[in-house]
Every structure is written in C-alpha cells, then in structure tokens.
Image 1: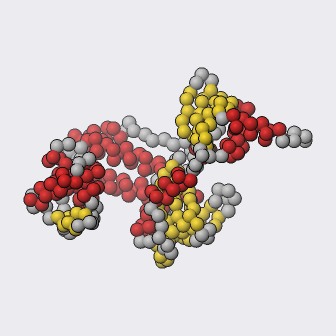
Image 2: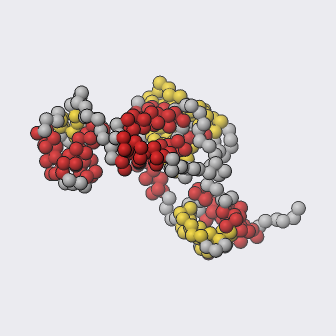
Image 3: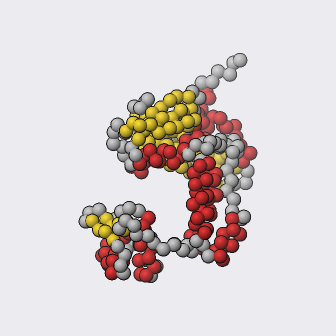
Length: 317
C-alpha cells in the first residue's frame, strides 16, 4: 500500500472509533510508530481536525464527517458474503438490521459494482444441516444485540433458560461478558447469580430475555481473556485416531466436536478421524455408541478402557 492510500485508510479508521491508539494504526498497517506519527502529522497539515491526548490516542473533532466512502469491488463482495452467513447463523433482528445497512452500502457503489454484486449474489449460498443442528433462536427478539447493549451499560439481564442436561427451564439473572460462535452455535459467557459462577449458555436455548435495572456486582475479565483461560485449563490433551465406517459418519453429528474433533481423512471404505481429548473415560463411553462401526488406531489406553467397560456388562436378560 502506498503512502497516500495508507493515509486515507488511517483517516477512515479514525472515524470508525471514538479513540484510536497509535499502536492500533501501526499494527493494522504493519508500520513503525514513527511512521504513524509522520502520517498523522500529514493529516493535520492537510486541515483534518485531530485531537491527540498523550497515552490515550487520536480522535477526530466532534462534528467532522468524511465525504461518502467508496468501496472497491472486492470489499463490497465481502459484505454480501457476510450477509449469507448472518442470515443463517444469527437471530432474525440482527439479520434485518444488517440488510438495512447493506442496502445503504450498495447505494454508494458505482453502477458497474452494483451489477457485479447482484450477479454474484445469485451464485453464493450458505447451507447448514438442520438434521444435526437444531434451529437457532427463532424469534423476532433481538437476542444478540440486547446482550451486547447491556454489556456496554454494565447492566444485568434476566433470562429463561432450558438446560440441556435436564430439559428444565430456570430463571437466571446474569452479568454477560460476551458472545462467541463455535461449532454452529452462538454461546453466551456470563456470571450467573443463581450458580454464583461463570457459566456458558447456548443462545438458542434462551427462551426469553430482558434487560433489568441492576448493575454488575463485580469486575469481569474480557471475553478474550476468559476464553484463553479455558484453553489453558485443558491440559494433558491426548491424541485419538479412529477409523469409522463411512455409512456411520452421519450419525456422529455435532457430538464429535464436543469430544475434540480436529480433522478427518477419507479412505476407501472408512474415514480416519483425529481428535484431541482431555478424558479417556469420556471418549471411551462416547465411542461405545458406535463401537461396532469403528476401530481404534491410537492410543492403546483407550482400547484397554473399552475392553474393561465391555467386560463388566451383564448380558443376561
């Protein structure tokens, strides 16, 4: 990227946030802090009203607006791709708001780009398997945005939640710290007043939710730090390799992800599946569900545990 384009991009970045740190600019464009200071100085010399505070960052003076932004064809295409994903993997209201924003984006495209986007749109489809993954929160409630809005206000929310292990609905007051997407589902991390500890809630199991006028009772870690701490706790992972008959793969569903699925290799009549698991016992008992359709390659300890479990079964009717 040449210097003129980089300075223009920095100006757009400054308008995207209230305050932007010099290090953020340096990291994004892979330049030194000295180069950042030189580029900022160029913007000031060009008459851009900037405010800088030592140790905080840079911001545009209130009221300053950039002229309409022009997107490249490739940038506009990424928004259309994102639309397909948002439609399938978020709640209805979030998708509705995204569509409104995308319509405004298309309005500033040149005619040739508009025609290109409309043509590509017909050739881009995102499908998810409802056979193994139940539908997400199917309500007009703006679930994810309600959660995020209350996070910014440090306000609790009240939810009616269906736990998977007992299918009972419970009312919880929670202090949310963030949402993330994994294995085809949205998850909410929050401090639960009922359990007095941090819990993970699957968003599609939240039956109702509402913001309440109750401030957070404690300081919480960032979502990134919390998820990183979970990863650090997953010590002593061991590799599992099994071969599963192809006609059985379809029945494993999302359970394979819960058991540490990493990747698979298709062979002639079987699929070689690789896992990183934290529990020999847990994996062994899951494996017993399809034991007649699979073979353990490694580790030997898993084979031994399977034999132990099976040997204790009383087959008398």
